[in-house]
Length: 268
Image: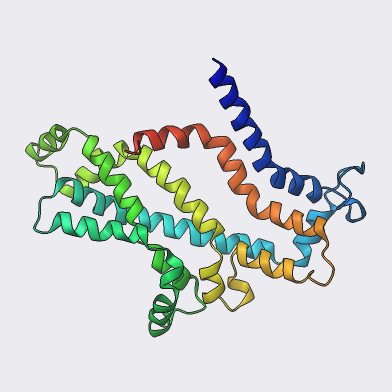
């Protein structure tokens, strides 16, 4: 019992420590510029910071670009990881284990290491400074394929045998039997992939040159740099809150479903 209370206290303290930057950002985003750095000052919350930030930079276009990239990548990933996960879980072909190991090595390689060769490839394909060029390297995901493979292995093979006996073709069987049962894995991977792509900064920075194609992270960085001679922290925090708000809301609304999905996706 004593250990339990100690553990609760320690983890609660860590949670408070990790929340301090977020709470400071929330407080400063609604503070007037003259009270932004005075943590003990009382003030009336204002939304003028958000309207000023929204009009100072094309955040509406940044949102559109980010939503297009994140949604497009996720939709293509769902198709590829479903096919790859099913193949590695159910199909017995020559070299399947070796190919699976080679695929998993992608998880061990950080994308930053591959920026230069991938950038050269995008240049040869004439995809530099395009949204498709930013999206293309992320269409395949080893982690997503692993999620699907682990989940498919938990599905009784008798369902597939019954479908084969009834003459169900493979595409229909995947769409009507496996896809509904793979929903927990899709949710778990969807949260991880969408949050990573939403926060991705370095690759868009290398690929995008024009203002109208910038995602939110790149737009926020350029906006914050414009204040480097005299930072207006209330505006910078308001812009940051505009960027992270969708992820915060999604996490607060679906944290329980995400936790349950991870538990059912073969992650122990």
